[in-house]
Amino acid sequence: MEFVLSSHVDLGQEEGDIFDPSKLDPERCESCYGAEMEDLKCCNTCDDVREAYRRRGWAFKNPDTIEQCKREGFSQKMQEQKNEGCQIYGFLEVNKVAGNFHFAPGKSFQQSHVHVHDLQSFGLDNINMTHFIKHLSFGRDYPGIVNPLDGTNVAAPQASMMYQYFVKIVPTIYVKWDGEVVKTNQFSVTRHEKVANGLIGDQGLPGVFSQFLTFNPLKNSLS
Image 1 (spheres, one colour):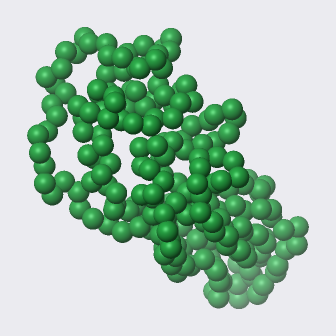
Image 2: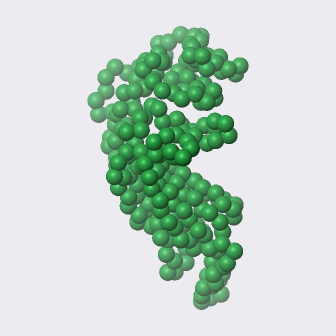
């Protein structure tokens, strides 16, 4: 499974003053801006403040009002990364039940038992979900197998697009000429897309979502 999102640019071509955390008092205890908790009373870094907000279920709206984030150049770093892409590859082991996996910007957290992403530091107008799916399969390969999403190249027509790939999986048994049995899966897929204007609910979330609906009770046998 390999996804490539957006394009790649090198960062840090021009560097200004570099923040040196060693110059700060190691015994300091800085504000969490009202998000303090029993086990997180001090927020000495921008990430600490973001984590405190995440635990509270608060949106992290304007880093320029947070001293730790200003000091660390958080907004500048985000600006430098606005055209940056990412390459994702690996394997997932899942149960034979309906589920999903997705790729979306922002830090995720649970709010009222709902999975959400904090996109406030990005801005919805700056999220480009252009993507290329080099390969996606469910199980082992066999001669002649067709994975319908391989080589899929999608250019997002505008910002904050939400792409949903609805996948229907069919268990498959392939018997080789020497008698070896390969247990794997085939799948069909339907794609839907829309502009996502929010973080949760009917407005959707910008990202690329793969929802494998069910494992079909039928089974194909090939030889």
